[in-house]
Image (cartoon, rainbow, N blue to C red; front, side, top):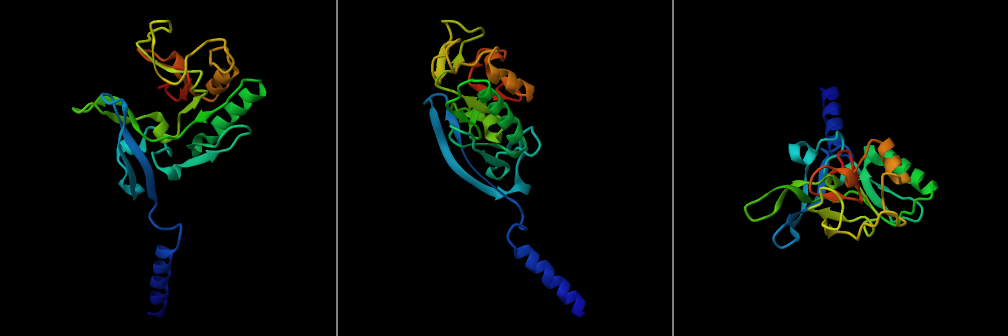
Length: 210
């Protein structure tokens, strides 16, 4: 009886101890409104990880929308940014390699939760999380590598919708000949500048390029 009491007491203590409670997931998200062309429905989410939906878990094991699955990367001369913990070494190696080869990097954006892709809702809002939402995508030098629409092949007809003008050959602009392109490709990340379809995202790297 005494042994049983001690066992129950131990279980109770463990359940209350920090770090051993049911894992919690927290994140802030929003929906892109294609009509108003701005973020709407900005909200903070906090829930047990056991209650995450398939959509919130994403396609890469261990890389959900949760802040708890992310880690902050600090590299010389760059503002800190976050990526999924299991992608940290890949991104670090690629950026350090590019910098060592002289490719100028002024800014990097990683983890950023938001519904910016997928079909539109009846009110014109995007309905799916981007790869940034899971910490498996990064944007590099956005002011020199814009996101374009109506752009099957890059040219004057392409419509800039985010970031700065893309000028191949300018310092910091990403091309297939760039060291940062090669370094990211070596780590298994694809470039948004060569994805198929109407959009070209020259700042962007992710497992799918989208």
